[in-house]
Image (tube, rainbow, N blue to C red; front, side, top):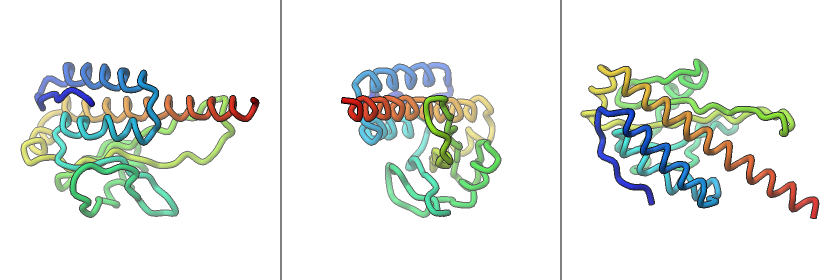
Amino acid sequence: MLTKPSVSNDSGAADALFTSEVLKTLDSDFSRDGFLDSVLPELLRSLGGELGGLVIQQSGAWNREIWVGEESLIPELLIGEAVDRGTTQIADGWCVVPLATPRTNDVPLTEPTASALVIRMTDGEQETLRRSQQRTNQLKNAARMLASALQRIETRDRHLRRIEQLT
């Protein structure tokens, strides 16, 4: 379980804490779902979110891969805009950060799955986001870290499957 950081304007300390917690969690040899279950609730709280999660696009629709909090309607148009533009989008209390899907040389080229971190911000954080580029950058950094961690887990799982095939 992650430590419970307080929401603050010190994005450097929050980034360092999140990085430390992600690295500790990855060292625990988690599955993708186990990693997300462990990291995502505290990540949302540390970023000032009251609910949110990871969404992926499947068959032209945005679906929750993992969600924390009440399952309200997700802002599909905002998600699409964020992913299409490759930029963080903030509107109507929602913040959407597209997750990068890096391709590696050891994987056959496949169509990457579009995904995004979607956060419903608390009222106080909505105002902070409107006024603070630093806070927006913190959200982007957290999304990059999350995408990198998921890529690491997927690469490890792929290597384990390959080893299993060869033995």
